[in-house]
Image (cartoon, rainbow, N blue to C red):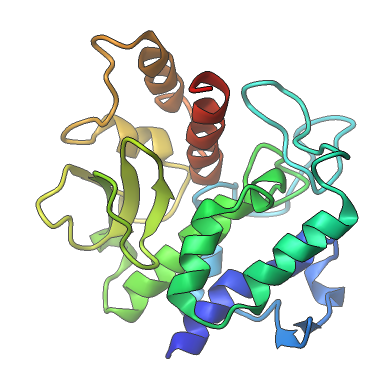
Length: 244
């Protein structure tokens, strides 16, 4: 059933073009996109980062598909970096791949999709990490896990196909029903904006908060963020800015 996993990585292609789902094309570069993800994984991943119900604009004068950075408070849109041709080329590479494990790694490594939010109503959210969360939930559900079984797991630098939702030089994070002996914390009984709760309950933390002032700041802020895609993107952005 690899087609289901491929569909997960392609399901929000319309958001990169700022198109409403109801009017989005069914294909892109000859491959099917914008399909419904089975097992309710898309809805559950959305609930991890956004409130349920009718969305409301949360940031005045920002109604674009480009994400706002929590670090700089500015749009991630850079006309020099994100020309239409560059974006289309990068997105084409992401979406036309048909091997699900290759797609997973490509999404983990993509800089382009991190520039987009998962909803214009919630511009600090991240389309990149929403998509990775959808794939992680779907893969777990297909394996027979229920949401209440799932845990946030800290790995070293191992990438577990579809279940790793963040990877950096120092650690990786995955969503899994089996922690495999690694430090972890339960997600909870239902999907909600529970990032800070899960991060606070980790059995061991991957950051050097006792000795590294940047890790102290990163950890302190991660303990205050509720939305999962926002938090995962914040880790990536923080490392990009302060590890240079």
